[in-house]
Image 1 (cartoon, helix red, strand yellow):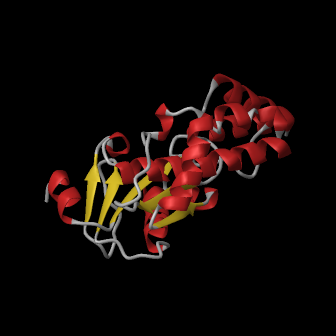
Image 2 (image 1 turned 120 degrees about the horizontal axis):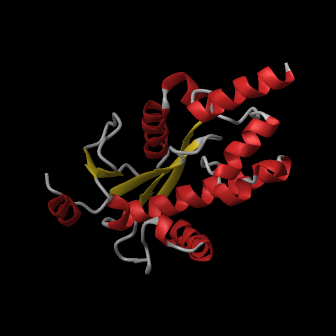
Length: 203
């Protein structure tokens, strides 16, 4: 079934998106949102295209107006055990299964659907095309950014509040200098390399 047909035919459509596939640290966080067609939200877009202030305001509005919303996650150790793609699919399953309303259809941002008990369509660049996926991307990003800010409070010398765990020059330099923390993903190459460097240097 085509996207336009799904959007026209069904009322309870869950949009699903993830944040945190690329970072070297922490969980991958997903969200599933079923919007209320009778209570529209203005300004929904791909979370990466919105300012932090706008995302925070929209996140509160989504939680207040959506028919249902749920967050899912896969922890660092699950990412290392399964790989990032499988862990992302698991986190998406958890988000959808956490919804208080059963969706009639699930629309996933990207090119791959997790195994679900509901009909599902993967929508490339869906976070800019489908309001429910945009809403999910906003909730997931706000939740994960808050976790990175909390991690920054514990480990300020890594700069998690700035790069949110992505492999920036500053983050990789801090990894080499201080070594990885427990939350770092050991299966990711920059972390592995920094760990062996740190062990060789400090024993």
